[in-house]
Length: 407
Image (cartoon, rainbow, N blue to C red):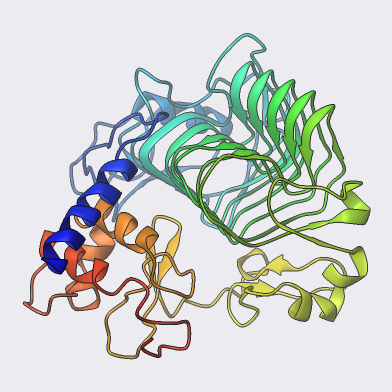
């Protein structure tokens, strides 16, 4: 009877968690399908192990002609003086992959004040954008606007932007709407909009924001946050230090918090000019800078993900010294083994086993990172992955603490 009750509870949890008000669907796997070459012709085959190579602004524009293909930068791209249109939209989103590959895009300019889905990428749905460095951007749009992505329903990781972004609503320094993961990323962008405005993300709808930071000036009328304007999802190990100006619902880190877990999130009360936030922990400038950060930023990994500096902490990858994680990366989460038995029960990397781990695992059973690590997620011990593993993980909720001990 007890087990029957727990099964019913599990189904209720998963049913409540399923779906997203912002969802755009899941793109098909195109990693091994040969893609037709866009114009102008690019070097490469457009597949995961032989992506198209982008070396100039004309070739960057050509990415939008084949949004399901795989791309990488082969050189720095100067987009100064060029009028640029976003790559991908709601009708034909970007579903492939784009790797900045250690190069930068500078001077990107987009002027579309009446348009939705505005950024270097307008809409990313199921695709991956990583290692992208944007400098000196000037992006103007309407709704769902960000320097890198207007609406992200894919994965954004290890990317950064500097410059300015303007819009009306759902506007962020890096991403306008995060309906997919944003991890190990940063924004040094001045953001100005009317409502739902964030230094990094305008609205985090159904995509976790992890190990990220924002330092630009953020201003708007309502729902304005130094890191995120409106949050409905998981936010972990992140901070904001830019000035925040709002008439209502303003916050040093988060303007309005409507759901999800917010852990190890901080804001600088001196630099932001805010002593309030819908979620997060206040710190002074002195506490956040230099070696003090290792003590005051509880939950941050200063061995592989973050590094202290004379000023605020930086992400290790930003100076090329990032080390591989000892966990398994899963759409912005880092699944970890708390007990040392090889099973990664802590799917979200929160340091505990909760119903959120069950929900995320249920949503990602078919994900490549899970399928390639069967032993790590074989919670029922039968050597294969199925819904019974979801139930087995649910049975572990609340039984293991962050030290790997049974409660």
